[in-house]
Image (cartoon, rainbow, N blue to C red; front, side):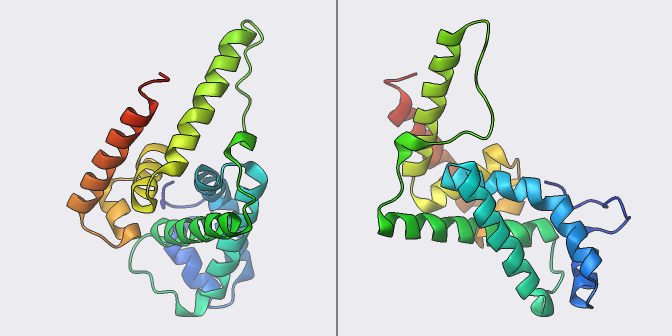
Length: 189
């Protein structure tokens, strides 16, 4: 996700400042600009598209509710990601409390089917499900660093800002996450 100029020529931070001044169209533009990336990030945490869309909606509601206190200290994407990570973790925590979370019912937002070779497609689906299950089992900080780096392609600096930690801490958590995943998945891959 980039916080570069939008189609209207305003950065995310500039749009948010317009929202703060009461410009509803600027908020609509923020949603249109960033919703796919926010849903994608939430999906990596919650494991299915419907829940990811629900959490993403909460992210934008929270963003709108915080408009009066918004200060452009960095990129809007950093602010949005922080909200998305927190909302996703809250969702998972609430799901665990209700014991509704089930890794064997992971839904996919994209099809992994291969009409040429159904067996190969099935193997890829199984492998992807194992990887997602292993990621979900990581400690919260390791999971967050891994998702932000691998799937959202953020820099160490951006991740450190989102998580409120140092760059060496990000590097260490990412190293430990990768090490744990290798150990967990070694028998299967």
